[in-house]
Image 1: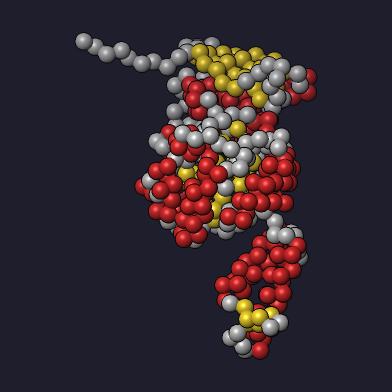
Image 2: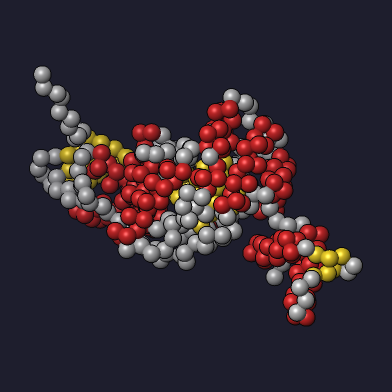
Length: 403
């Protein structure tokens, strides 16, 4: 009995078009046995950019080694890095261009991201929707997350991976840390193979339950960096989203020195626990406390989950303030409107800053006098209190709250 032989489709497509679509492009690709390259283009900007789009399309196909094909392009205002990604995805879906890529011009990389950098807010951007990318930095999040996991349909994982790779290469996110949330392993390893070469600052790992998963990702990142001559760091942030993940919080946080932060995903965690997620978060108090404690014990940052109700800014503020009081240093954002509130919630208050500055001044005065004991008025200040004050002042400066 002979098995069926799988063959690649001769007609494929990638991308999106239509009235509700912007900054994207739809590419229909058909393999031909001869006749060269035939391209048709439909675009509202064709009178201005039509020739440039056609020239780019031919260049991408040439880079991918395509000699004979019929290509139909419906453009909805896509930038060149998006056009290249959609054409490449369609070609790959036809089983062609194996081992080849068409990379856009690389924007100069920002400075490497520090392990302990400010991470108050991280803005999620769906990995299959380029319309969100260009202006994301204008909302001033501390980080942007190009998401390949929950926001991307299973059938679009391959195309999103190519788009995110090109986005890392071509888009200037300014001072924002450039994060990529990969898929749950083993699919996430395919994501790494495409994106690590473009030097993301941090990889978010979903649904981590075992430190071995973190070690596997860390090993692959190291191998990819070595192979491509990358010397800048690529940090890791595991996301704990189950009871087992929470119970293994410390070994996960301590799995490798490249773990920079530990976070929690409350939607999946509460589903795993079989409880309702509430605005007050009482049902996740234990889990969130354990994340903070494990992160501190491992010497990494503790970052909270997202607040799902984008219309409830008062609830978001209360959540953020309570989160900071627990020891978290930031949280996720699913809408740009949440960023300002999150930054305010995680900022030290004026009385806290004033008290911390007095303690720091007393500490510096004692240092100048060669005294081992720090006193403020009639009170003796213990070393842990001094250290906490120093950290608070340093954090307030990093936030721009004080100079």
